[in-house]
Length: 299
Length: 279
Image (spheres, rainbow over the protein chains, first blue to last red):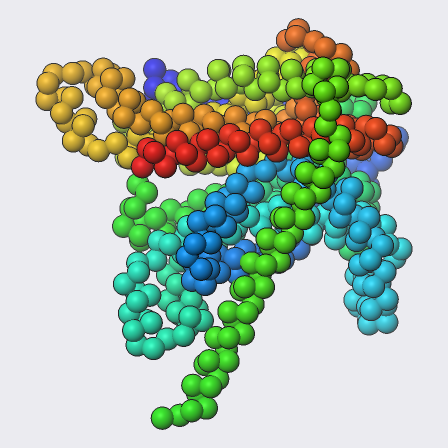
């Protein structure tokens, strides 16, 4: 019976793959490899290409990671090395609890609070500042919409921040205290201990945790859908509206008419599943290797 | 003694300490701002009507009663279905499979499903149930949520069973208890608080899930307990109301968001208390 339940887990996983492939068969068959590389998305003429959505997914996630990973590691360092002892547990617990807040909360905050603020106070400034810098003037061009790729990336980074901090802190705590004490004993500064002892020791864990966060960011639907603007074209400017795979599916699936439209949306889901599978699999492998080195602490 | 090097090391260290404290400050400020906005707007929208009236048409008064009912109903069924499956699978991993290649694969697949995008699970259930039934239904929503519950329960059950000392299992075996009985009467019982923690975390997880319900349970403007019909749920109503142009719908969306967050945080805190007792 327990084996049956365990096999059911595999069955569900295989079922997900089969249903995504069979559901997207029509679209993949019709458009071939062009589905991946074209960015036309026109329900009227029934021409669909996933490139704009893939591009938006990768860009928002990459930006979110660039912002959230250094901040998350900073918070973890603060918690393990700098935080006054009485504050350590409450702040740590608060961050872990925030990691469990549903993403729709971040989405609604982004839409009603952050986007208007960003539109009125930050975007005009960005546009003015970079307006005459070559190259950057294209990246930060256009009217301040408030919603757009950049806003979505910022909301995503805030959403994955508690998660990265919590995982990184746990990983830092697997570093044997003797190693750190030895380094402090020979006169290392806190920075040197972190940089030369703790980070090298825990690198696979930190990278694995970051990859888990990336997996979340790539597939995140609700935090993004509210603020990205759902525009199916690739714009050079980060301030312009864009779309991601999950935002496209969430916005259009229930309104999609025609087999080819639905099939293309499921095709997007298949691509998303493929990307996140690879990212999550790498994350697993990295985290497992750390576990083994830490002496099978959790095994 | 080289004072230059000391001074530089100290300076680098100071810069680094300032930067990581700043990172912590930025992160915490951002999160506090979100909670502040949520509390302010949420409490502004909260009233007795929220719990007693159904979702309104734009412009008329109403509440979230049908959405709360839908969320609770679907979560309960999903947990009731998902928990036994997850528990049994977790037991297999911890007690029978342990180091076998099959257990290795199941662990790997389970951990992927644990963090796979939930919208994918919505697509899966859509194809599996909605397409066959030819209409959206609460059944499909429950199934989608159950698929999300299973990996969470599998992971915590396995972890908690592994914390049970082997001497307990050996003691049970030495008095002649067959494995099945020793698992039921000894290891499950020893890990009970931990397993309940997992179930609480799973409830917390699904009560805020929006994406998998979008095209399974859909939405319903009216009070409905019919699992064959579409059913409202808090996250979907928030999604729909927040994206609308009506001010009173926005207020209700904030109230709903506050309710979900309060529920999730309460569950997580309970789970944490139980877990600390287990360890």
